[in-house]
Amino acid sequence: MLSLALGEFLREFWPMLLVLALGNTAIVALLPHARRSRPAWAIFAGFFTVVLGAALLIHSERFLVETVLFWSFALIAVAAGGMLVTQSNPVYAALAFALVVLSTCGLFLLQAAPFLMAATITIYAGAIVVTFLFVIMLAQQEGHSSADLRSREPILASLAGFLFLGALLCVLHRAYDRPQAQELTLLAERLHRVARAETPQEVFTEMGEPKALAMTSPLVDALEKYLVDETRLHNLEGRWAALRPGAGDKQLGEVKRNAAEVLRQLQEHYTLYGLGGPPRGWENDAPGVRPKLPAANVDALGQTLFTDYLVPIELAGVLLLVATIGAIVIAGRRSEELR
Amino acid sequence: MTSLSLENYLIVGAALFALGLIGFLARRNLIIMFLSVEMMLQGVALNLVAFSSYHGNLGGQVMVLFILAVAACEAAIALALILMLFRSKKSLDVSLWQELREPDQEPITDDEPLLPAPVPPPDPTLTPAGAEPAQRPQETSHV
Image (cartoon, rainbow over all chains, first blue to last red):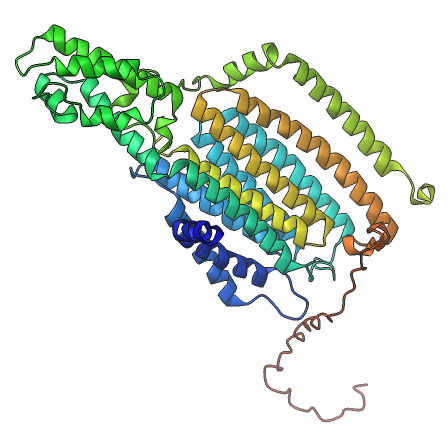
C-alpha cells in the first residue's frame, strides 16, 4: 500500500525531484569548505538548476513584456539568493542581499504594489544593508575571516532546505496543476460559451443536441461531480432539453441565464482562474470575477491603514520606539558590565 | 488581471525562503546568518503581495508594511547584540559560543585545516632602461 503511494508520488513528481537534487548538490558544493575552493562545475550546475526549474514550474502562456520582466526578476532573485548563501566574503553577501531586495521589489511592482516597492527599497536596501555594511567594516576589515571559510553541516543543512522546498513545490503543484483543475477550467469555458451563445446551434455544439426524450447533456454530466447543490444544473438541463434549432430569443435567453447561474455557482466554490488567469475576453463580462486592486495604491493603502488597521499602526510605532531604545541601551554597554 | 498566474510568484517566494533557510543553518558568520533571515522575510513578503493582488485585497500589502517595520526593529536589535558579542570574543564566528549549546550535545570542533592563504605576487621590478652614462675620468679639482 505504501509502496503504491510512493510509486505514484514519484511518477507524478520525478522531474521536479531531479531538479531539486541537482540544486542540492550544487549548493553543497558551493558552500564554503575548508579544504577546497569553489569548484567551477557547481556554478554551472546551479545555473542549470535555476533554468530547468523555471522551465518546469513556471507557466506563462502569453509572451508579454510582463512575462519577460517576471522571468528576469525571478531569475536574478534566486541567483542572488544562491550567491548570498554561498559567498565567503560578507561584503559580497550583503551586496547580493541588496540585489535580492531589488528584484523582489521589481516583482512587487509587477503586482500593483508601487508603494511597497519604494518602501522596501528605501528601508531594506537603503537602511538595513548599509547598517550591515557598517557593522562588517567595524568588525571584519580584512574581508574573510576563518569563520567565513567554513560551514556548519553543509550537507544536512541543504538537505533540510531542499526537502522543505520540495514539499512546498509538491503542494503548489497539487493545488494548481492537477489535471482535474484544468478539466474544470475547460468545462467552465464551455459553460461560458453557452452563456454567451448567439444562436441555438452554438448551444448545441457545447452541450449536445437534445434529440431523444430524457437525454442528458454530456456537459451537465461532467459538471455534476463538481457541484453539491444541483438544482441550477438541472434547471439548465431542462431548458436545454426544451430548446429546438429554430427556437426564439426568449428560450435561448433562458438557457443562457441558467448557464450564467451555474457558472456563478462554480466560481463561488472554486478558484477557476488559478491557471494563467481567466481565458481571453472573460475579464469584462464574466460574472463574479475577483475584485482588482485599486489603481491609486498609496491613497487606498493610506485609507486602509488609518481606518481598518489603526491600532496595529500605533502598536508598530511603539514597537519601533522600544526597539530604538533597546538598541541604544544594548550597544551602549561597556563589555566590563557584561560579567 | 495578469497573464502570470498566482503560483509563479509563490514558487519564487518558496525558493527564496528555502535558500534563506539553508544560509541560516549552514553559515557561521553572524552577519550572513542574519542576512539569510532577512531573505526569508523577503520570500514571505512576496507571497503576501502575490495573494493580495490575486484577491484584490489590500490586507496582504498592509501586512508586508508591518513586516517591514518589524524587520527594521529586528535589524536594529540584532545588530546591537552582534556588536556586543563581537566585543566579547573579537570575532563574528557563532561557533565560538560553544558554552551556549545543549548539555548533551558535542562541541563543534574545526578539524580540517584551512587552505594556506594565497601569497600575494611579489611587486614587479623594472629592468633599468637607457644606456649607462660614459665613465668620466676622475678629476681632482677645477680650482
